[in-house]
Length: 402
Image (cartoon, rainbow, N blue to C red; front, side):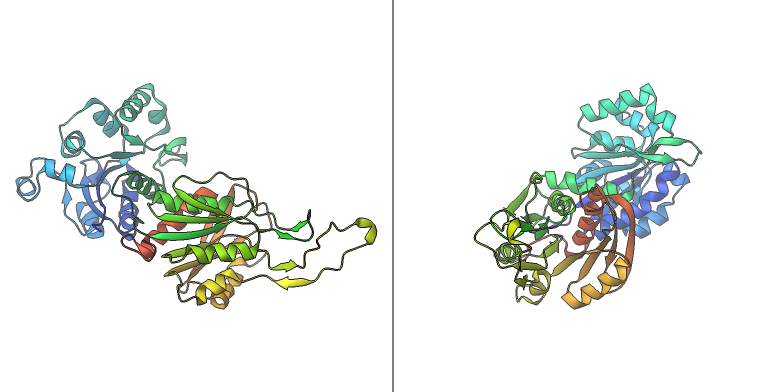
């Protein structure tokens, strides 16, 4: 399968330096990137820097005859699978909205027949100015995908919306747009199994052993992977969440049922075991246990270790990711769990707060090489980051689950 090609237009402003990280992430996700550097952008980053990072020529001048000979601006505008403008300054957005074509960047944007993604970056007052709001509305009406800028402190000292979205968020949006296209995204052709939510182990006809897992993190990961064009099988414990778009869902209740569903979903290129599986089950009473009979005497049995069994399975996915819900020293405990279970990666989170059922998470990604701390962020952001790492690790193409 041909690698996806991104044409990155780097506008002016201090945020232009973040284009360097975006290039790195795009390439790590298995895509190629060519850069067009505006005159304003060249005041903050050099063509040599972008060329070194992209390992491609950098284009700056509409009237460069050498470039026109090797690759005309019309060809350049149309050979990419997606055109990305980052940072998209107020001036560049205005040029795009009014159809200007007086430099290389604006000419390419006017000539392209491919989808365009713009990531704005500007002063908060410029972003909220009526003229910019009109220009953004016009671009969206024209079919350009315009991201909302991040909110925070700016280089000028003011605070508010206008910061360039983080490169990881831009990459996630790139993946979403490529996944929406007929040719797919960076995980096209790959099959990923995701488990999510709790399991419930019955005690009698009305009572169960369970935990407080909401399934939100696992569902977010399944959705993020699907947006990168993976074929996702989501094995879900008893939760009330809607099925993410483009995801195949298998509902289960107990750990034994989850084990069987995971086995049935093989082969797969990767598996992300997010579910909080109960460690123990009991002998089930056929009748309701009565309070008057006193505390029940329960016979306990260990549940299957789905992660460890999958690691030892002949059909083991190429990338096996486990989750560790810990209280205290999560990273160290996750490192020990990774070795004990035979997983490639462990994502550890401290659940002593409101992580279970909450909307945010703070995790450590533990691999054989290192432990990487991710600061508190939304579960959707955790999912996007992890999906990007998985895409970088296994890429797209004809996979085990194709």
